[in-house]
Length: 640
Image (cartoon, rainbow, N blue to C red; front, side, top):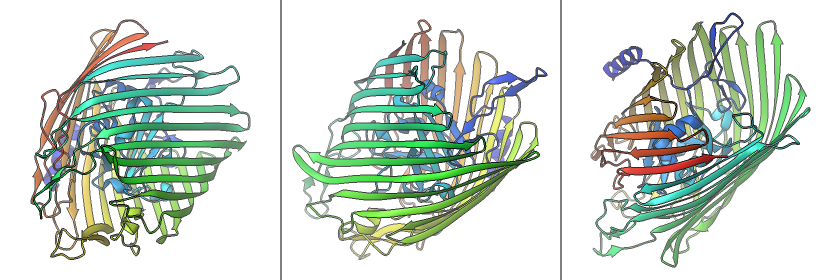
């Protein structure tokens, strides 16, 4: 492992890159200066990406446009530190995790609001359409001190289109896109944004997408194509006043997905065909207000709600039904004090929400407990003095089901020289047991404790030149009291299973993101992700964590020969990973290549042609489920 880390560090320094695009300007002396990129996710407030004390990746709207990815899971898998597991192609159940943790240990937000299922503890990425997204902020490492439960591996904050004055300065504008895909399908989307005469910023968007799909699984019993149909809508409204701001946003999706579920009964030998169609409904939204008490003091109140419903069918017969409703309130206040060149920022707040579930599993079995209340109080302190930045935070969460958890973090960054920033951080985290863990019919364990973690990181962000940047990090994450499901009777693995706090893991990794603008026509990028996700649990100590990525490399090249034409290519290499705790079954490594071409007919009209997995690589990210093969996409976008 040490040899790999040394090789990776050497390769990182030998290559050049730009992980996040920046616009350049000039100061009063005519020296070129890069604009600071502002992020909101790690600290729940606006801060500088370049001076962040933890690793953060920003996926911009331009990055999404350049990608050949047809959906969100395909987009996220190309970034270092991010692992995506899918049970098939478009519309299939999919999940995301950061730095070798599980999907349930990675917190997914939509506009800062907690999303996902309270039964499974995960978010189906396929329920969030790319056409609704303005940008994505990926904050890696422990962030429970800011966001509470489940932010052990990090946070993925998906920010939908927020509206306001258009990029060309117009008060209002709109776009419409229509496209066709193969495997055969198509989509249409539209968005309108602007600012009214009264100063209201707005954005409204909608999309319908459908595909015939393909046979998701390797099972010989269910050979039909698994199709997908989804409609979605998003909105954002805001208005600024002298005394503050009011705002609201939301994302709604409704989809139907076919999937394969047939299996051969191990006792009778008969082939069984349970439910094979799922209807999924998702809504995440909030309404809030910010009060500016002064130039240096502001308070915010937000009311949030999220819905995650899934119903399964076979024909007209309804099967399992899992519904989650989450609603709550967040109140915080932020004050800044400046003494000479030192800047002190204090943020404090309270958060409370209720999670409730409704539904049943297998033959009408219901959960013993269907709701829980959670409350938290948190505080943060940041100090900035010349080249030094220090961020600290502490939070106490109380859950009526398992009690309380206290988490904290401390991080520092220091600008060693102009454009070269070193950082280091330490954080603790926890994951709350889900309703399935606690109360799944006949199997849940109400005595479970929350999972706990300790994470460490050292990193470097270097703007080598105006055209070249490098970001790299070395990290460690130790996890205790992890929840594992196992047979109640070890001699009868087909009997009832129950969870307990027995698993432990230690994850060590190195990641780097690089890129370089060679000239006005050519630009390149590279990502490296090296990881050793080791299990420390009884019986499998020293084995690799199931489905834990061990090595991933990504590369991309963009060529713009004319103002109208832009070509992009991207390659991903994923090393083999194990599918079981004993490391007896291994998924093979894979290489995929994507191609994208944009051609502008004029300033308002553009064609996009892309091919994902151009060489039709056959691979799996989840055992028994085929990843998408070669996918074609041709679309036309018109701006108004």
